[in-house]
Image (tube, rainbow, N blue to C red; front, side, top):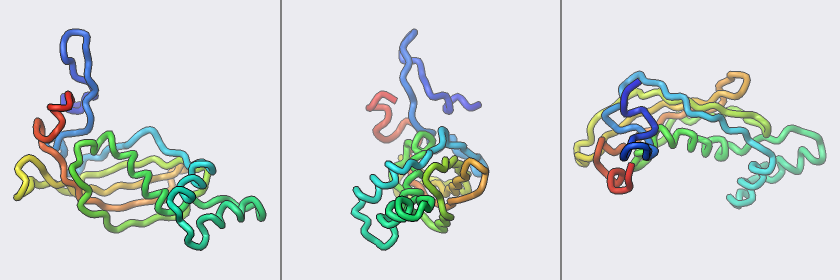
Length: 172
């Protein structure tokens, strides 16, 4: 394992500081990162997401009503499934910006299911206009507890280079 992948660094003897994210230089095309732990969608969280998002589109609030009346399984709203990409934050914690998200595919996910995300580095290049940053092309996938692929997308990320950006001033 690369030295930069350790999640702690010794500040002084016996004092450790958590490091956060991977530096741009340490990513390589073909690397695959598993983002753990998984994320389980509960009924309460799903209903809370719909209510706080003021999503009044047909079907969102009805999903919960249907279960209560007809005993149907509650389908998790697709935008809530996609929001679980926050599982990638520990790995991609030094992201300056998400530049794009394309090729999104989401199959039905139901309350009670647990998703496990993984990401593969498809491309990498230094930024031409921002010398302290680089660009990553990443493919992320989510599988449920049965191993079925239920979500996938590609992103372009702007990531800080080693020792640059706000991280050293923040102490990590």
